[in-house]
Length: 191
Image (cartoon, rainbow, N blue to C red):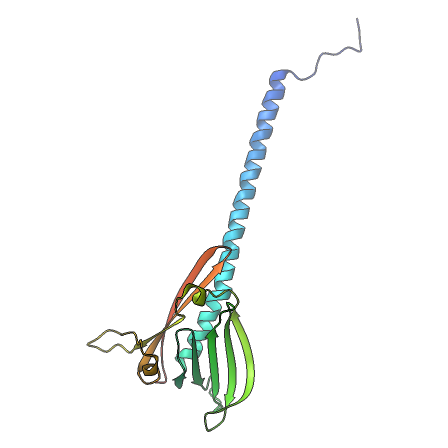
């Protein structure tokens, strides 16, 4: 009669079942963390796409659609003369996709002779633009479509100021090895 000796511990079967249940719970927790991590990555990419591409395209669409004239067009830069807020003060927006991966807008106040007078502000709309690095034009200029013909891309940049009726902006961004892209088609209202 040994009162201190008690054989009521866990059996090997009970330990194996407990470890199996623990592994199942840990596996489910790991899968849950993976789902959260993947959705976080998706959210981050969507955020970059909205900030780097969506906001830039919305801004460029607003400026381009209100232009009074187009000046010095290239595949990666353009100047728009506008009266953006309808205050009879003209602004010149000099927009360029640069080799340093930025898309920049310089806003100049313009006098009655059409000369830049004061640099009002400079905005950097994108810091991860890949158009130049990929050799893909940011701006595509088109003649306006008519009832008998489709819009035709203008390849001679000297013809753009007089003949362009539409602009297609093709934004490319590389973010964490992923290529992101969106386009916007802009019809010129004041031309």
